[in-house]
Length: 96
Image 1 (tube, rainbow, N blue to C red):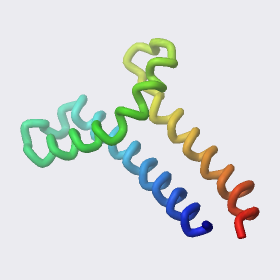
Image 2: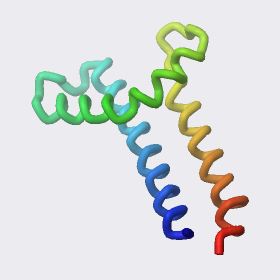
Image 3: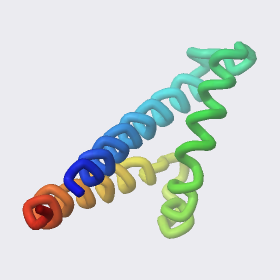
C-alpha cells in the first residue's frame, strides 16, 4: 500500500511540473518568444493544454474575473501540496 501512495505522490509532483511548464510556455507564446508555427512547439503546447486544462477549467470558473491574470495554476499547485501533506502526515504513517 505504501508503494501505491509513493506512486500517487510522484504523479502529483509530476503534475506540478507540468503545470509550471504549461504556465511558462503560455508566457513565452504570449510574448512571442517562441513561435507556435513550429511543429514541435505546437505539439508541446497542445499536449500541455490537454493535460492541464481539464483540471484548471473548473477552478477558473469559480474564480472572479481578474482581467488578464490567471491564478488558477497557483491555486491548483496549493491544492496538490495540501493533498501531498495529508498523504505524508496522516495516511502514510497509518498504512502497514
